[in-house]
Image: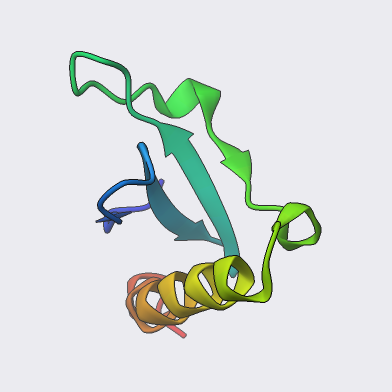
Length: 72
């Protein structure tokens, strides 16, 4: 289970990396997150190159944390 999360303002979800893959989990109207509803981020569904770049930036922010947590 990941121990570090990232929330990007305006996205309505939190992000985490597990086994070198970026995941997201929606945040409901009460500010609660159900990690059971998480899913991998599919970069192919990005509407613009800027959206893809933003998700890659988030992944890159979390990757070093995930590698340290996994003992890589």
